[in-house]
Image (tube, rainbow, N blue to C red; front, top):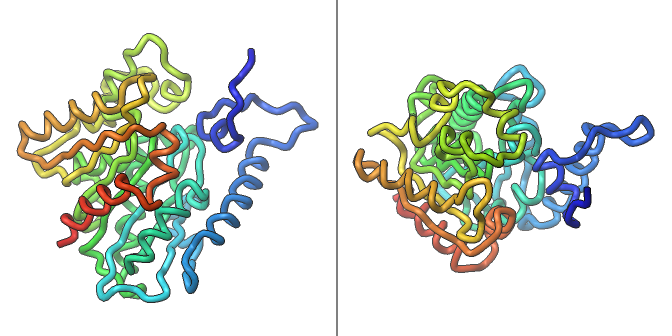
Length: 305
């Protein structure tokens, strides 16, 4: 079977690399090399004077770590932007340039503190456990915030793809954050999540294996990890950025619109922001000068007032 010409990072994120032959480096080694190269690119893109505190632990597992990016001149009571990477719930890394570079540069220039989170991955942890990891990371970041001159009460969550699903789940049912002793964030930015209505997603006729690996076969579990079904009246305000050009396995803007409609019925402020960008571009281009970045920044500014 011929595959389209895409980059290694995309193949890793989608979980499409086949098991290697003995002469080829193991997938974990490939991921580690990729992360190292991309982290070097990330550092080069950051503003002068940026300080990085890497691999701060919020749990005992090796994956339960986050990196903190600090501006040379932090704002008084600086806001915190906590970012969760994508990767189909089974790959991805906090140091990838697509996760950090433009977003951190943009946020640091505003005097904010940028945090990029890792969490355990499938098969070691299912999406519900991953969401709990992220909640624990948020609590840890907020507990340490004052040492970075940041205000723990000015926390905004952001995630792309699978990470978008995790932050949307936390935003839909803030009880998961409370259980981790995290303070209520000001809002959630969901970047083109492919899983806002998990039961509807799992009933698609053509579905990449990564979804079945993540969500299994139990409809009760699908409901338990679905933002659409978990949405509560005390849900966090959410900005649902979606690709208007993507249609597979579901149309993300239709899914976002469905969640926003349920939010209106419950009195929850959910805003849909369609973008004529690909799934990857929605992640990569946020932070670059554009109307897209301005719209996201404007929404965040309203939440932080």
